[in-house]
Image (cartoon, rainbow, N blue to C red; front, side, top):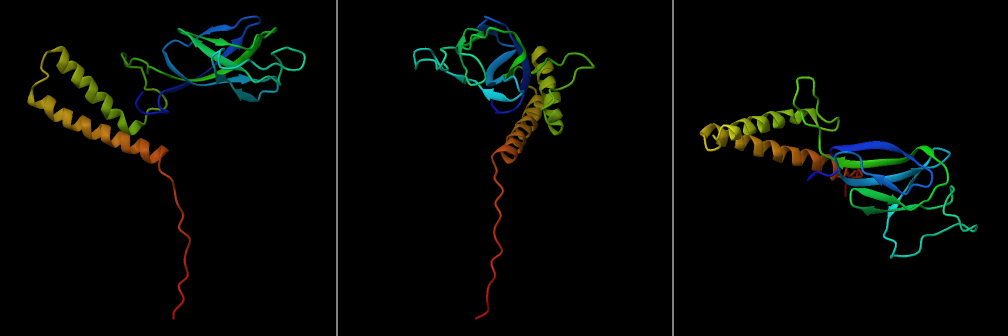
Length: 181
């Protein structure tokens, strides 16, 4: 979770008529984006707010539904309350981006999360070796210290990889023509 944008899952959920309470997906640690899918297929961000912040807007008829409504949600335990009381069921009416715990790799056919960079798969192997040494009570051996140094180097490389991919900006310097005096 230290690196924003990694291990992000996207899922859709049906909106059920007259239902406001929806559970988070299994393994969800944090909702990053929640969007309403409108009848024409476009998406609108659903903003989080608590009821006591301000009154929930309604259209001129007093209804809080339809494509002109700006929806809100609020958190309640392991659920979220979708403040748009719909009168009809909408298939795939909610789209979520959420950060979760990556799947446990325990069998030969298991694969990493699709967003995990292949160039850092060695980090998983070293972590597995650490767990094996830990299970055998050999955390203080010289080999573990050597692996720890390699692991720290890989973590630093991972951080640099992420920073260069997400933070760095590309600047273009204009060509300056110098005139001879």
